[in-house]
Image 1: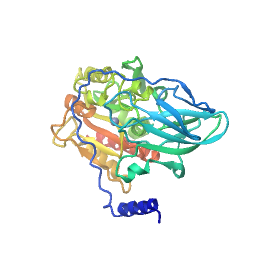
Image 2: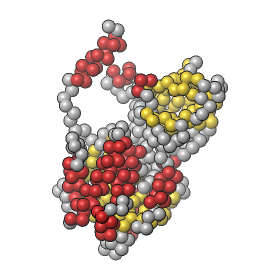
Image 3: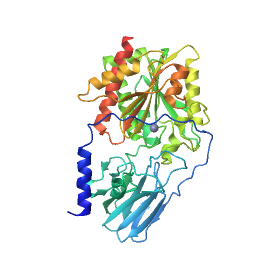
Image 4: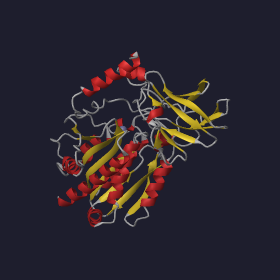
Length: 416
Ligand SMILES: [Zn+2]
């Protein structure tokens, strides 16, 4: 048996001896950091000509490609770097590649020193419909994995032709797609769209108002503070579309409640293909106490204006993505405007999905109020949850969870 093969067997054996899957403990509580604006590095937007008939481009919204080289006869290596550092290691990439004549290459995706590969690559012929790279042609830095380290690169074979192939970390959903989806919903008589504010780079941050605008009972829904977090976006989309369904439950809910949605809190980060930050070089989800960035400040100001007449936020949710599905809630001892609502909804949702036990992770009582949901809980007493979806959670399951969460939320909020 070769050394390599032995290693594969040894790893497989160790893996099979692991205890049955335990719940993921989630991220450590966020630490306070300065959220004052810092510079970001813009990508050089261009078509890269490798000289042998192979071309790559980052000239589109959401693209991230910082460098590329021909590193073998048929090997193309790309370099992906973040907008600035320090930054959470969620290395987003997206670019187009084509060749003048058909040829097979190995495409290697690398990052700056110390960054681990995270997103399994997806391919598209039109930038809209995506498939995962075939696992039989995919390698993720086996040497690092065998050392118990994060893979530093991934590599896969790819057939090039004059037709463009899009390569991306996740499905590409940028601000114009989001605004188009929102405008489509706003055609319904009970949905309206308006401008919340401008982002740092002057992009429009829209919000939707859904349901009864005269109701004093409100909800707030947020998404895309973190640009690459597409699975969170997909859950949000299913959640909102369920609330906008024309059935008895939703109609009753929309008559009773006034729902606000900011579908893209960070359009600059999304369109610039950022790993994490806004155009101010800051993780927006650490700025909910200091409000140094225009995007977070705008959402907070909007919510303050809505409670000025005595209206109340009863529920708020912020959709994100991480390694595994998890729900960050406030400490159960802390009572908001509808105590117990969030755990009740998540448990009821879980009960409708055979074999699914939602991983609910409450914060400690004194956790810092620097993230959206803890800030919104403390300032507005809305019952809040950070709804985290795994990067690789099957897309149909994401849709199901988003929909069932909305359904159970509506039922439970109508009972009270
Ligand atoms: Zn996030």
